[in-house]
Image 1 (cartoon, rainbow, N blue to C red):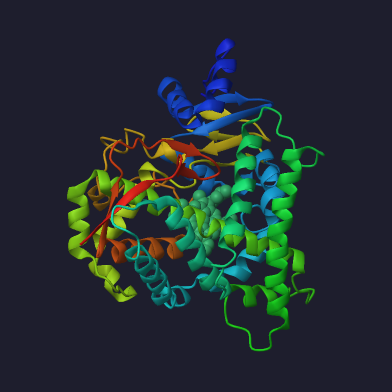
Image 2: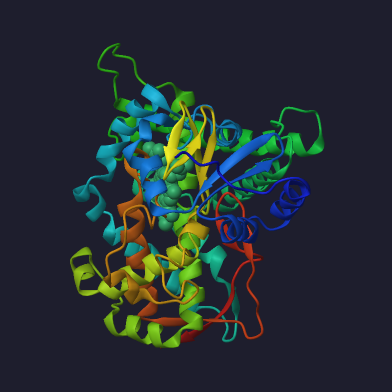
Length: 439
Ligand code: HEM
């Protein structure tokens, strides 16, 4: 028998909307506690289905993925104002082509070759930290942003963006903050009005474009090009038409990779240092396997670093929610959905499902020694739209973590209460004030 999806009715629809605007994470968690693992709720003009069961997640992302798209989702449409038509936001044949072009830059061999660069950038950062006066309180979240932005620039585009970091970070901040506000407003308007807010949005986007266009122009003019992602995209030809990518497309991909490739990993690391500071026993175990100059060959001997990063992303998944639109009706575990239905997954809630994760709020890296059902753990999504940078990110996070842990302890400043800020990514609200304890 096909069942109707439960969810708030009557006045509760309104109160859910207001609560969601203030605190989306707790609101979604409460909805699943109250109504079950498949729940529907309204948000402004949209009816949304939230899947919180591994079997349902597996169906949407993998087993029946052709039925789900980003093209018609109002959230990805909005995101296109922000990121343009890059790999994260595009869909259909265009997405397939771009993914094929980008994939070789993420082969195992290419990734492993990037390990020394990742470690070197971390050592540079540690050297800077050593010059700080004793007792300095660092914003560890910011530090991780700077570090991962530098790494992704060098790794994918052979470009040290350290000089432009402030500028890029500021523009991304404006765009991301405004994207979130627009997602959360009941009638999400694109940034096209002559208001101060919309002008600021357009200026930030224009500045990012300028930076990206300059990078593309310089690379085009270069005769001896480095073999990186930018060159692969620039030199790629469509096998049927022989056409190459326009400067506009190249810029959209550049901005997409700069953002998707640093913000997420930086948040994963910030949350990891936060959790380690609260769990000194786990930190000591990590220190025991850490090395000041790790290589990629060392990683198999550092298995705890992997479990720690996985457990940190279980509790604080950097991409805390994502979704798709259905082309045709479908059924999840006996619950029917219609066509053009928005369906979402909130890893923040899913990763706390007590039926899969005993003691869900506890930080226990060793739980990753056990098997888990398919679709239960999806910080990088799953199926054909799995994050292209997932191996890059895991290798980077582990190398950075062990390099740092071998030399210094990051301690949360006494008396700090860390809140959650659910933007497009999940951040520690107001940053992460930490002090350094050299080992
Ligand atoms: C801890 C770090 C990271 C996390 C948690 C993460 C998470 C995700 C998630 C959940 C998606 C799917 C989003 C959706 O369906 O809308 C995604 C897609 C993507 N990610 Fe990541 N990501 C991380 C690191 C990276 C890195 C390092 C790069 C690049 C160097 C990257 C590039 C991308 C791209 C280009 C896509 C779109 C892929 C496609 O649809 O073909 N990500 N990521």
